[in-house]
Length: 251
Image (cartoon, rainbow, N blue to C red):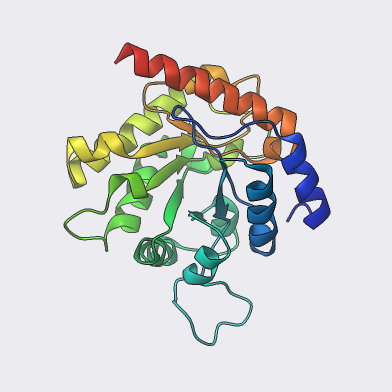
């Protein structure tokens, strides 16, 4: 819960970046700011997509205080975060995450599915087991044919790193991302898995973004606290863009 309408508009004015073919920029404000930010971005001629921070799994009905996927779309969202660690900490289980993922896809929103292990799970060597369990349960109801891979984003966010100032090392981030991509290939196909974007989230900063973005299976970042500071977020975007351009050349 950050920023009000005026401060959000000031953020847009201070943030110099836009999307290009190497890097798509998405911001996910509180739902009440989606429409004002859509107007502000349009007025500024900025190519930045909007996403929501959460959604309700039902399309409508008596769910006071909740927001349905269609409402988010109408407010300007193209993406929605699903299964963020803070939502899971508030009681969301894997079954609810799966329902939200299905609701987002059915409505035409691109879900950013968050997956990650806690500190105790990491210490016990259960990181990959936890990731597989979360991923399999989230995707179990999708069936075949698989959805458009361009319409699904995964975000590896080690819970122990979020807000701690201690990001996962590049090797750990790459291992997790590669594991997730391999599991997608097992569930669907190798060609399909290659097209799914996989992000890293967890104490991302302008200082560590370049190193992590160089990992072959990391396609970008899910940025938390650093995104509130336009200059810090811009540095992360620039690092992502440089590495994406380099990967394109190497292919």
